[in-house]
Image: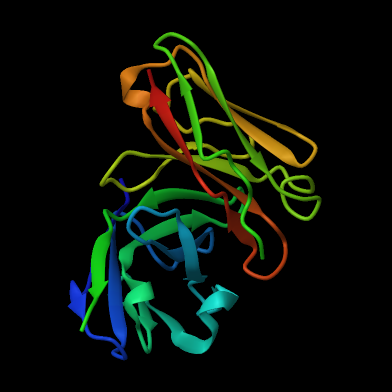
Length: 120
Length: 111
C-alpha cells in the first residue's frame, strides 16, 4: 500500500519561500507510470493544481503560478519536493502531494495534506 | 486553462440517486475518456472514486457510477447514504498546457 506524507512549515511570513517535501513509502518515485503531484486547497475553496514532476525530472506547473514554482525529485530518498517563492496570504492553503497515474489521469494516492498559513 | 464546470451543490434523500455533471470542452472532456472523480469529506484528503469515465477502483461501492456524453461527464450516486455527503471533484486530461484540469467541485447533501 503506497503512502505519501507531506512535511513542511505550518506558518510563514509574506515574501518567504515555501518548501514542502513528500515522502513516498510502499512505492517508488522512479516508476515511469506516475507523475508526482502537488495540489492545494485554500480554506473553503476548491482544488488547484500546482504542478507535477516525472521521475526523469520533467516538470509541469500551473501557468497561473508563473515562475514561483520549483519542483524536484530525489530518487535516493524516495521523495519529491516543492518550492514556492514570494508567498503571500493568497498562498494560504492545505497542500497535498499525490500520485498521478499518467493515463488514465487518476490521482490514486494522496497524502493527508498540510496546512500552510502565510501571515505577517 | 479554464476549470471544468460543476454545479455548486446537489442533494437527495437517503436511498435516492443524485447525479453531478462536469462540463468541459471538446479539448478536454469531449476529446478524451480520461475523466476521474474524487470524494472529499471535510478535513480529509480527496479519494479516487471513478477513473476513465466509468471504472471503479477496488473498494469503491458499485453505488457510484460514471458516464460521459459529448463535453459533459457525470457521476451518479445511487442509493444515497449518509456517508456520501461530501464534496465531489472531477478531473479531465486536456492534452495541452498542464495536461489535466480540475472541476469546480460539488457539495452533495443527504437530506
